[in-house]
Amino acid sequence: IKKIAVLTSGGDAPGMNAAIRAVVRACTYYRIECIGVYRGYQGLIEGDFESLSARHVSNIINKGGTILKTARSLEFKTKEGREKAYKNLKKAGVGAIVVIGGDGTFTGGLKFIKEFNFPLVGIPCTIDNDIYGTDNTIGYDTALNTVVEVIDKIRDTASSHNRLFFIEVMGRDAGFIALNTGIGAGAEEILIPEKNLGLDRLVESLNKSRERGKTSSIVVVSEGDKIGKNVFELADYINENFPDYDIRVSVLGHMQRGGSPSCFDRVLASRLGVAAVEELLDKSTGIMVGFTNKKISKVHLDKAIKMNNDINKELLKVAEIISV
Ligand code: F6P
Image (cartoon, rainbow, N blue to C red; front, side, top):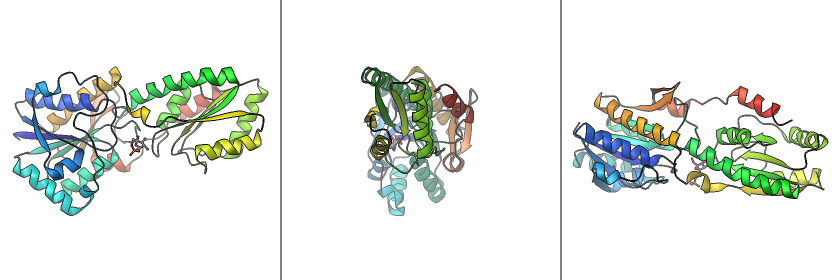
């Protein structure tokens, strides 16, 4: 392999730049040219490439977002799109590619490998932490810290006004952000897709809190929660049951994806960037590099997207116990 391409795709996450930097510098270290692809798979289709030197990635380890930009390419979902991408890579003399992103990125990558047998390794990078085969995805730790910081601020106003707050957090279909920030920020209840609490249980729990003398409460709701109502409908429903409660809803939204990555995410991104390049040099393909039990690990991309990360039952129990 003389040239390795790198792209970021899907939702951006803090630490993406640190991962790009590590890939570029590992390539430089092993004397391989690194080709940056702009706007994810869309840039692959349009041949939007730039050769990246170690100096191109100076001063980005601390930056949120992605210098390579990102996109969710519809064209790459078509065979014609993927064919154009393959031709562009061949024309540029690229021998392998590192894709940085989440399940959509890996799904596209898998199709690409199956059709063209093109060497490809994935790096898990999404705030959702919904990828199997790694304890943490890059960006997750930073997002947790961002959310906890914001909930702490909301707590100030919740307690001053004796209010009940419903705070919606991201995570797509996974409750990792909600469960961990709920515990970290001391939420009363945590609603996640993996465990349907049911409306009656929620009402009962809020009732108990009031009986125990709580004057304000925070309920963290994962955006993928399956309680059957969106967060605003949920707040309305609770208001019908507790007409005297002063209820507010806060949807945190995309602020959870921004900001400077935590040290944990920077180190993780640096390790996985180097590991991805080394795997390609070792002729691996179709795998994702991850971090499991304090060690670099690897898993087939198929498993990474199809298998589920289990929600930690002990965490659920802790959340219940410490909210009395
Ligand atoms: O996958 C990251 C994520 O932020 C999810 O948590 C969320 O559901 C989704 O992306 C939002 O996507 P978009 O930025 O396209 O609105």
